[in-house]
Length: 104
Image (cartoon, rainbow, N blue to C red; front, side):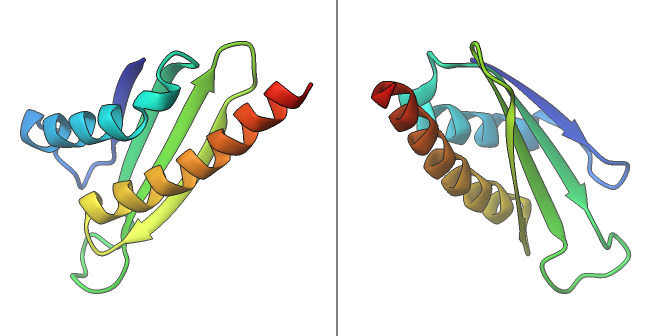
């Protein structure tokens, strides 16, 4: 599973930001690692000039072998929390997709 990070102009896509998130994503999605060919992580700061609210957005797009890509989005006060919420949504979606595939 290849993980690709994309950030907006308000977020520095440094190694310090990417490394722990990449490790977390690899660990949390390890069950699906053989099915996911590429995982794209899009991090945005919706209100960069403001410090309040759930303005950090994480969109995860999983490219599955032999299927159309699936995507989820989550908002939170920090990027780490947004990634965690998005991972939980993606795991639920992939569990459903894998379950359907087994039934056919």
